Image (cartoon, rainbow, N blue to C red; front, side, top):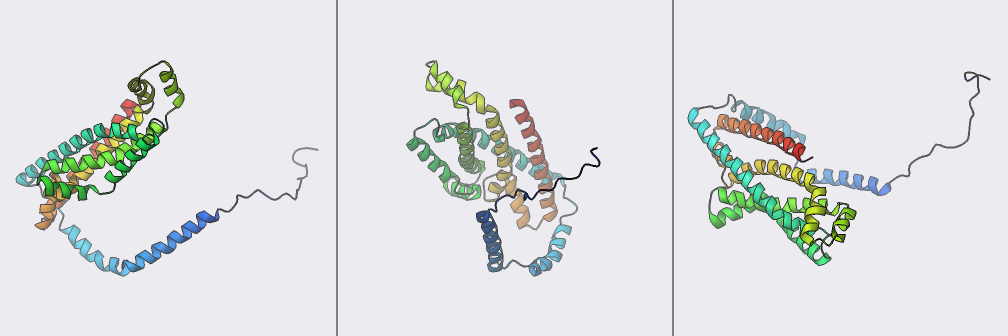
Length: 270
C-alpha cells in the first residue's frame, strides 16, 4: 500500500496538557484587582486625562522653537560639562568602593555572617533615591557638584555592589579551587580565579552605571547638586519653556552618546 493510500491510524490517547498553575493565575488576578483598587483611590480616570490634553498641547506649543541664544547656550554647555564630570567621578569612585563590598557580600567566598552583614549595608544604601540622598548632602555640605557626586556614589555603591556579588556567586568554583590548590593566597585566588570569570560582566555593570549616573546627575542638580539640573529647574521656574526644550534635547543627545559609549566598552571587555 502506498503512502498516499495508507489509512490513518486513530487512537484514543488524549493529547498531553500542561498542569494549570493556579498560584500564578491567582497572583495575576490579585494584581489586577489591586491595580483597579489603587486607581480608584488615587483618582486616576480618563476624564482627568482628557481634560489635561489641551493644557499639555499648550505647554508643548510654548516649547517650540528651541531657544538657542548664545548666552543661554553657553550656560547650558557649562551645565552639561559639569553633569558629565559628576557622572564620571561618581561612577569611578562608586565602582571602586563597590568592589570590596561585592566581594564581602559574595556567599561563596565569605562566611555567612560577613556576607549577610554586607548585604544589609548594601540594602540600606539602596533604600533611598539619589534625590533624597542629594538633599541630605546639600543640607550637610551646601550647594554644588560635591553634594551631587557624593549622592551618586552612595547610589552606585548600593546597586553595583549587589550586582558584583551576584556575578561572583555565579563563577565556576572548579577554577577557583584549582588556583587555591596551588597554595595561592586569597588575593591571588581572587585575581587568578575569580576576576577573569567576571571581568566582562563588571565592565558591563560599570558602563550601565555610568549611563544611569549621567541621567541621575540631572535629577540631583534640581535639588542643588550641581550640573544641568540647576539650569533646567531655573528655566522651569521662569516659565522659559523654549529654553527648557533646548536643555531637554541636549540631555537626550548626551544620554544617546553615553549609550553608544557603553556598547563600545562592553565590546572591548567581551
